[in-house]
Length: 367
Ligand SMILES: Nc1nc2c(ncn2[C@@H]2O[C@H](COP(=O)(O)OP(=O)(O)OP(=O)(O)O)[C@@H](O)[C@H]2O)c(=O)[nH]1
Ligand SMILES: [Mg+2]
Image (cartoon, rainbow, N blue to C red; front, side, top):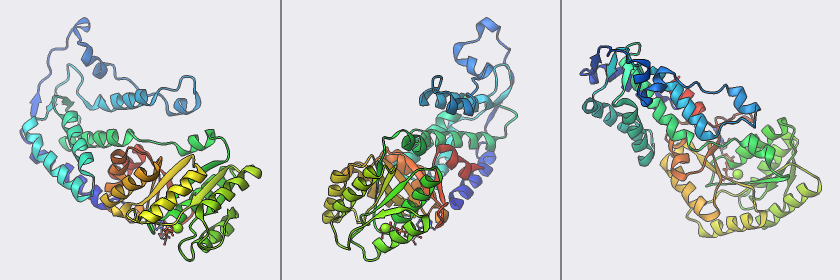
């Protein structure tokens, strides 16, 4: 997963010592008197520690805002900078350009969207210029930390905790899945049904792909394997009517979640886009999920934009990342569309679905 991007970034970090050979090594300035310490230096002298993770989860009353958490994590990572009074390294701005240009090429080759590549590049520049780094760190480590932090900042803006969301929703929660043909919608629905059932929730599958031959049978096989209720009509029936019946069934039987499978449709097929809008109008889903194939790279982003314009998507699932060497869609789709990636799918088994987060992605790219 993401092997090509990961390998190229490693290569870049390895090369940085020769690229940054004009790096300045400064001796320690005299340590200022305590009362002379400027305000903006305090965080390096008394680094702010990130709150304990379990405190964040358990204690709602003192739960810091997302902005505070991001800030605290950022402060914690900044302890790599040299404390006042320590000697350290400063990277010259003009030298950085060759590193940043190479980083940009690597990101473009990985199908990272232009705007996101630019933001990462500028983030790295800001992270590196004007700062003095402790001699403890080698140049490649310093550049890696700066890239890691810039990627983190891009991803952290759009995070979505599906489990917290579904927990708080009035039941039945209705989730509709849309996307072009063959991206993995039906498989993702089966994975989510399995995941919800493991979390003690009851699920109804709505077989609203009445268009493709075999689609109803495909969902029925998943329903049988997972022992999940399925509501279906005949082939070519009105998908909006199937969704309506599934939701009515869930209401009357007090089921927790309705998962609506829809037919794959090209974003350019206006008839099918109109049909999808009708399903959304009738079902009034609580969550509309765009399912995109991560291998499609920038195309997946363009598709998501059209589906978003048609029905307003709330979240994204990226599939087939087990076969994606580049990682560009995972890095840029949420930031470009302004909607979070809820899950990524990494295989064909029912358990091959992972909750997406900035930290999950950073682990795969840098660890
Ligand atoms: N390797 C891999 N294959 C996947 C993944 N998700 C789905 N697939 C495969 O992709 C193919 C298409 O999956 P479906 O779930 O039928 O896709 P769909 O979007 O429902 O397709 P349509 O209903 O025809 O639009 C199947 O062979 C799946 O097994 C994944 O995360 N990794
Ligand atoms: Mg399908």
